[in-house]
Amino acid sequence: MSDSREAEKIPVTVLTGYLGAGKTTLLNRILSEPHGKRYAVVVNEFGEIGIDNELVIGADEEVFEMNNGCICCTVRGDLIRIIEGLMRRKGKFDAIIVETTGLADPAPVAQTFFVDEDVQKAARLDAVVTVADAKWLSHRLRDAPEAKNQIAFADVIIVNKTDLVSPAELREVEARIRAINPYASLHRARNCDVALADVLERRAFDLDRILDIEPDFLHAEDHDHDHDHGHDHVHEHHGLKHFHDEDMQSVSIRLDGDVDPAKFMPWINRITQEQGVNILRCKGIVAMKDDPKRFVFQGVHMMLDGDSQREWRSDEKRESKVVFIGRNLEEDDIRKGFLACAA
Image (cartoon, rainbow, N blue to C red; front, top):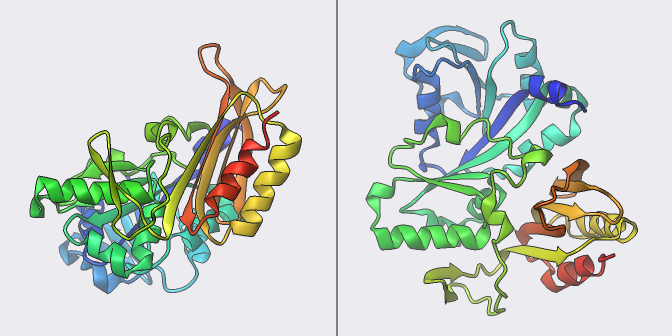
């Protein structure tokens, strides 16, 4: 698909986060600040967000117009139907923001943009943004698997309410986040006071930009894991605490030189089919034998999207890197399988 067709598509941000983490604050900012953009915000329950009625101009059925040009609508039925309806409205939007409920797993919402052809033609998944509460996140990670999913799945994580914790507590929360997801971009905030540009238009699902915005992915986990998966097992690494999460982990593997496509393609398909239930996100940049271009892929559970992108530059090392984030992954199996794809 040509870049211009992609560029015309409306970017969709999936916003997730545990109850009380501060999603509502962020949504209210988007719906009321004079940012000069037209955003369509899709929320699960209109009552929960508590929109300031003075800002609402007109409301027809499930769509509310705001005086800063944004609109807000509630998902009462199917997300696909809502998005298709938004696409047909006169005056296109700069972006659509879909809020998932506090308990929801963002994966099914993200998958909508992989599977529905009509939605795919008009919209593109931009990024999954998770708002986390600096004070309560550690507790949530203990008692709520959904909270872990939201962290594991995110491209952008806003660590909110940082004024309510000590610097040491903040470092610990961030180490916990990194144990689950080493490559999302992290922003600290007090009152969700992040620049909207840090949240919107991230192009995290744009295959060509996978590494531009995730520098950590390159050297996320070159150190060997020690395999003591005790609940709060911590070891020091470069003076930073590293937590090991007992059921959620990231596996990142690097291979010098080229990969044999005849081995790699069947392997990546097999691993996502067999372990896809447990793989929340996977992505990678691969040097294929005899191919001057970089092969880039990413996936959500069992759905993979991959493409040959730009040519390898002369100053770049031809190497292959893959990362998997999920729960109870067969790490040794994944590692051996990928390394066996070497050309």
